Image 1 (cartoon, rainbow, N blue to C red):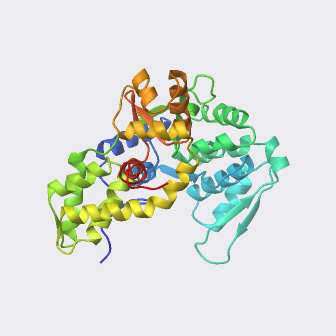
Image 2: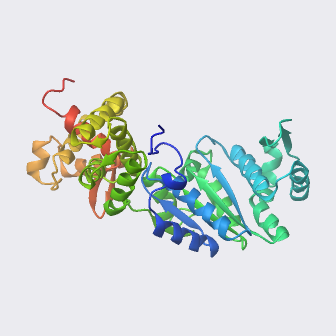
Image 3: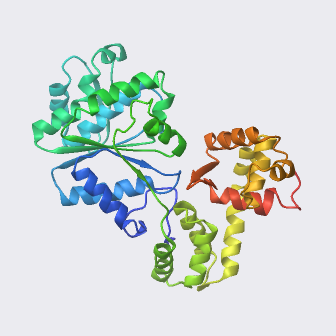
Length: 381
């Protein structure tokens, strides 16, 4: 029997979990051609949410074309421009002849090389002479706007892992180039999101950055417990297994409402359940998950300094007065100024995050692993 929970990939159809208000709000902004910046920690389901919202948008409004670009493996400007051009052409055309025609219409000064597979319905690639393309970047940056005008449609460009532009050779100049063109577009809107929350905030919230106040910033919130419980119980029920609301709630609490880990822990508990999911099944599932994660977390701790490790121990002990002399002495943090440096370093490493002035773990399973394994009295380092 197929497991009823999904993690590590896009959630679709019944696998998608209760974000009705977020979906409606995104669609409203897309239809108004507002640029949206979606910010949340990694593995919170941003990609699934955008996919879900754009599917509903295009079913509702046939005059919207959606371009999706993932910058995960794109390391340079030249790769960015090539992939963007390909995805725009694909979104606006369906046939090979149309692709060739569109390319000829909108590349006036650039001579791209288009490579097609002989197999039907196959993908195609586009390569550019970078020296030539650098002189005429506007042809690519304005392509979606020109195609939209010609076709009488609107285009939504969704870019995942947008913070990766910070790794390009001259990221500031690149961002200035993008904004200079994108802010002029009247028929194209943008949805920009990524998995490095602190880097995304730097790009869009720093007054010195080109993309400051570029669009509507949406801080994605956790899925509420009251949404998770019926989802988990229903998914168990759909596969002829049972879980009580109390135990469904226990899964959510252990995973701290984190979408990826709620689904992963629920799936492991489901696999260990014959008919009725017991508390012991959930504990076994958690042990399994922490054991799977053990080598990864050990490597992560190897990149953590002693004072940073002490600060993490402070957090799992639920200490809140980080800068008092008692706490500084107890956890060997040296000084108040050093505590500030340690917090900043851990945030930059994407280990902790700030929410309503509280310090939280980006990865709730890391917190449980530290508490139950790494900082336990029985663990030998």
